[in-house]
Image 1: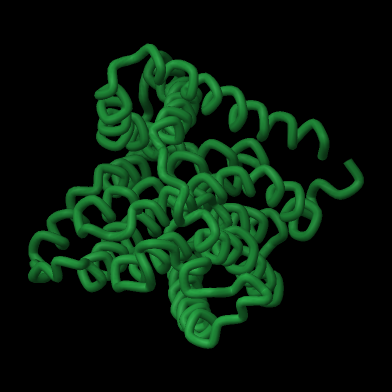
Image 2 (image 1 turned 180 degrees about the vertical axis):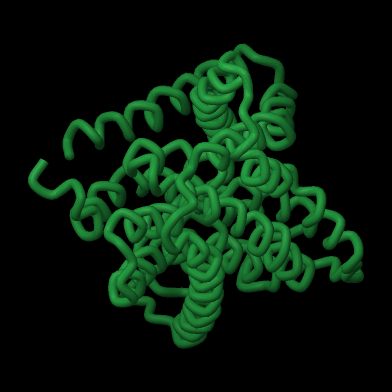
Length: 331
């Protein structure tokens, strides 16, 4: 298992670290350009390639069910935890350092902070980080589970429930234009890339085209991790770091642990179970920042959660491998 962890950790450390350094010399607009390019071109090509070659046998159709379950569990735990923190803040335990200020900071427990708290607990970075890490840790036969999970979360989570919740908790309380949200869902490029890849599985391509598709995956993944390092270098405000601990632990420990236990009890194969645990335990998504900008939520809380969950990922991967990755035991 040590060799596997080295292969998984190496890109997670090298490419974001390089991004942190390069951001100092590259134009300030470059991260946005790279992010848009990955969103519209890079990640769709990656998903197209993976969906063409992934093994769709077995109970892969269960993946969206577990995705919805993980989203619902994250929503429920976030709401319960938020209510518990409000109770602690109202009672206050000065001797223990528990006060309203220490828990919620300068922003307080307003609607925008609650919305950010919920989003950071629910939505993980399954597209960039998930599809970069999971293929290294599982066999090709179960890559389809990871692809299915990423697409399902983008559609049902980020651009579905995520947009709805961001609009609901917005300080400005804008009108909920359902047609605009529907357009956002329909135009998700990863969805069309996945459908195109599945529908053309039996359509032969030239050797050059197939080779190019396979190699493109190993270009997209470093660029996505490079972008993560650049985005991390842009973060300056850490006022919400203490409050971010709660959604980070829920997102990285509680939710994937529950997903793994439920999957094991339902008889899901160990390899597929590991994929579900890893994908549900990915760090807080950068897409939350986009929602925060659009709907005027608490950006500082989301930024803090992104940093904490990204660092915590290095510790949770070996834990999930030991608990659910039975395929690696004895190695």
